[in-house]
Length: 184
Image: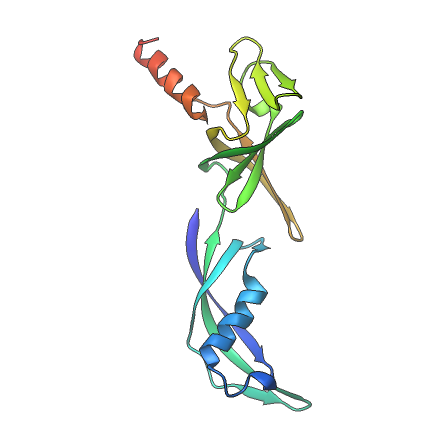
């Protein structure tokens, strides 16, 4: 889920930046500090979109910099367990498929692709269901459910499943809907 989050922070503005546009200077400092970073409480911080409420700076003895309290808006991607997400398969390996969901990748383990036994074709980099003959390859558009989230430091892992009704490869979902309507 994408959302905008407002947080407040204290920004250190070095003396060499004095005399420049304060909002642009603070925005550049905050973008370097926050963008493309994972925060366990907030999610994946994509972009600092705005800086508001810039308070008067204070100088600390021994450091010529100005410290300004500010409020900033950040666009965040915050995946949630049980959320259904659409994405693209970006890599197929023997143990599963990596799916691009927004700015992050998640893993669909082979045990979570279908209720079928899965064969890995190393040459063609595909995963194929033994009985269903469903083939999953790089570039396929899929729908999955987030079943696990874990993060340590800057590394976040997303576990996905496609073994539930109306999720999986997009054309598998269409086939499932036809069968449900008795059109198969």
